[in-house]
Amino acid sequence: MLVFHNQRLYTAYTMSQRNKVLLLFGITVFLFFCTTLTISWIFFTKSITTTEQSQLAAIGERLTNLIADDLEQLDRLTTDWAYWDETWTYLAGTNKEFEASNFSVQALQNLGLAALYCFTIKGTIQYRYTIDGKPAETLEKLGNIEPAELLQEGRKGIVRDGTRYFLAAGRAILHNDGYGRPMGSLWMFWPLNERRLSRYSRLLGLSVRLNKPSETGQDHSFAYHQNKILMNLTLSNMEKTELISFTLEQERRMHQYSTAMFSLFMWTMLIVMLLLTLSLYLLIRKQIFKPLQELTAALAARREQPDKPLIIKGIKHDEIDELIQAFNSVTEQLDAKLKERENLLHEIYHRVYNNLQIMASILQLQAYRSQNEDAVNAALQSRRRILAMAHIQRLLYEQEDITRINLADCLNAIIAGFEPEEAPAIPIRLETDLSTLEERPFYLSLERTIPLALVMSELLSNSYAHAFAGRQNGSILIQIEIAENQGEIIIFVIDDGIGIPEYEKRQEGLGFELIKILTDQIGGTFSIERIESGGTQARIHVPIGI
Image (cartoon, rainbow, N blue to C red; front, side, top):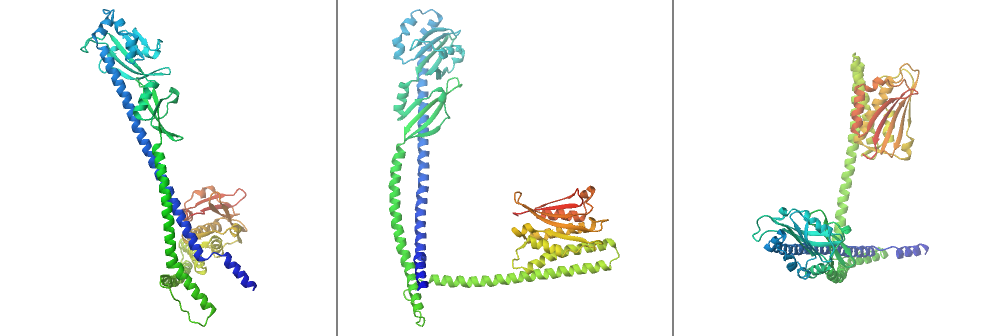
């Protein structure tokens, strides 16, 4: 009863496969819906923002054209006055009544002028009018412009005097035919004030504001404040020495309308997704869950009555069973082929090992028969290198994993099977310290194991042959250090012999050349140095992540 009770509890608290599928289906639909809405919202906001900015930039061009039109009108007015013969005679000093009859305050105000300056040919002020009666220093400096510079097209643009801005136009004072010697220059100014900006705002359908000189920003830069979009428009003054900054402010009506439409679209999508989800659930229930429930009921009945034949009714869709059978068949075939290939590779490694042993034996026999000392040394060195590779092949066919080799096993195999070219005349103790690899084992691929084995063989051979000349005994230590900060393993080969002479470190023998080539092949570095207390230390830096 206890087992049954626990089984019931396990069944109650364990999610069935059907519930898992439903949960996964619900999560998928929810994520799809959220992803669709998120992508739609990003696309929507990007499109609206781009459209609003494009429209505001077009309005900025219209504002520029409006200012240019006003400057053109002011230039025509200035030209009419400057090319008037009476103006020329007034500057020449022969028309005394001109100033009283034409430069009245009422007449100038009717023209909408904020200021008027009439300069002589020498740049002195012949007549000055300002709407507030005060002189304007910046406007008076325009008299420094030579009238000859105003003969062709004159000058027009925006000028600033303190905190006030003006639309300015200047022309040389000539005869009515526009030729001859200029008598001076005439400058007219319209105020760029709130009244004019209000006119621009009405024409453009938004708010236009003239910024202070200290508030000049980047041209066509956009900002958003509450439910408004702002654009900074900068124009150069008449002398191209200063930027005049305008701010165009517009309500985001398109954004408001589009947001309402997107909300409607979102609710529509939600209803469609709910209907689609319900339809898919009913379809899955009919096509998958119901047949599986019938199959489960049939298997439960078969478990209750083992002797009764298994009769499954109502299972019309048996593709799942066919898929499972086909998968099992393919899996069994692949598993059989994989085992066959693993056995074949083990056999290949075994044969390679045997062939290398045969080659080593042949070289040893050849060395015994040869009378040439150089030939004997070459044969024995080749035999030693072949045996180093043979030990690696033996490890491969003896272990299950044929794709990699444990570094500790590799070093132990090389050390245990190492045979120098000549037996040493003194006892030499070969020791290892691989304790760091016991805590954290490292594995090498076959492409890196063979070169490393050859490098270790060359270093041990060099120590046996040269390190202990004139000594009664000696020892060689192979030690491992893991430098995780540098991402490498350092293999030390240390002997307590006489030490390598400095000049030998620059020699290029075959052994050192092989060590250098093979170390580069595994992506590592090699160094050798003399120990002050006596002996030689060789270091092989092997990268971990390669």
